[in-house]
Image (tube, helix red, strand yellow):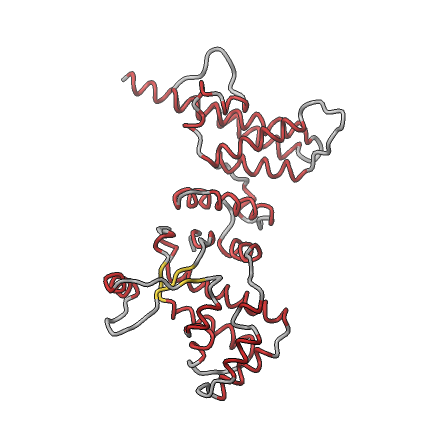
Length: 343
């Protein structure tokens, strides 16, 4: 019975704290345009309320001799290093940094930009898991996507990523273009659209007239058109990758990112047909994807590890391929954040 009373006591106190926090979030929305420093003070109080809630849930009591402030995060007495997740700690440290900068006297008065306020409120809403009603219909800003992207890159586990994504109002269709915009694209000269590579393929006698026509058209593209084509091909292959791993189950593990590389040729072919308005044969798979030289040109995106027969058997079962089907095991060379989003 005493245990039940204790549990009820925790619920009542945490509910009370959350009620106060919801009120403060409403005040933030009301005052952020006309009274930014007061809004930032509210953000600090919301952060301290979060620390108070976490401490109370861990200890079933509050410290009797002092208030909990953002400065206590590093105090070993409160054990916040053990209690807080990496995401929670980063958020509260950001709030502390902002308030230390703008809520103390400084003879060289700095301008408090509205973007700092918006970011502080957004980060606090994430850890509290309290979203504004309109968030569901509002398109997230690029700064929101950037913030989530950076947080996802800091995550150590798939579980952490899924938790962050669950709390966000961003989807994979918004994350993928942002990731591609941050990608370190290779120079055209080292891709399949380099003139040297395309001309060397043109000289091969076994290539059909249709393939040579395709190669001629690729050679005629401007440098900018070529890089845009590489980006489009990469995006189409990543979307096919997303489909293959079936991220809707939300069970994807980066270590399990192997797939049948030949499947990526079909979205590649569709992209080229749409862009160049050409109908070409399946021979192009060797020229632009599966040939030895072609695979080297895609090293910035994929690698092709050797695999035992046992591992291949496992992949055949996974892809529902018969025993006579040969395929090349392919892995993306980096972990793409967008694949963790549910459909």
